[in-house]
Image 1 (tube, rainbow, N blue to C red):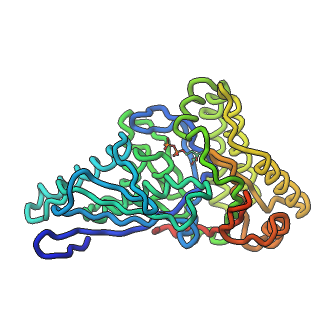
Image 2 (tube, rainbow, N blue to C red):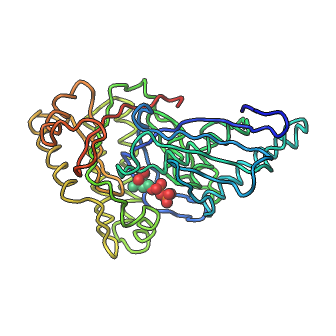
Length: 359
Ligand code: DP6
């Protein structure tokens, strides 16, 4: 926290948070109000040089109410129940500190100004809410000088957007569904730091920059209400996949990591299709990407690439650095030399490393 200006000081803190891409997907809430998931999930946080949200939080008695948020230079609302839940949890923690130590400035009552930006085009259609909420929580926690560790802060980020709780940590991160009714054990856990398996890479194929027509929040609620496959996925499929995935990561076994990743993506999208009305997140480009991964694995004679799709058509393909040419080469040739974020033609390609554990 840094204060500037003598009369009405402005207190300020800045931070960044990584985008994470789940290899075992969170889909379904057992408690929508507390944002508690039906199943556990596991993701990989991507390197912040490639994909991250940068956020500055400031507060001052010279600011007028209400709190404001600017995202990529545009004003955004903080009025929804979810951002409000996050802000009041953070203020409550600050206010506890102020009660214990009356010499501290009373920041908990001051209006907040939050300014956020992504280092990747929002138009790329990549899930940015996870990094966005994680950076928001972390910036305000730093501004308030809260002593809570990232795992404890993940309880707050979860209320903003479920997947955001995993972006409080780098590396390989689980979100345990928890069993407590108040959600106190539904939080992020470090499965392994980036340094444990540093050659993991993610190739991102942007199949569309359009905003998805069914939001994750709405889609998963309809799935919970109508899908027959959902119960089996939550109770049988995911618990077994979580165990297999943690083992694959512990043993740095890419073939198992890849098989479980692709199976879980397929299971998640099958559950979406089993929803009434059915939800289609993948498009023809997504299906072509799946075929391309199958073909390059066949050519290699072993599994060297794994696809996964979130609630949208963009593919994320995990591979190990030593297989870069065999995995990235065919996509580069198919898409032309469109390296970087050249999303104009409906397909673009970008590379991401894995974020450090302390990010
Ligand atoms: C398919 O975290 O966006 O990306 O909690 O309602 O904000 P809310 O949902 P959100 O859902 C993410 C769904 C997913 C899978 C995942 O990231 O685990």
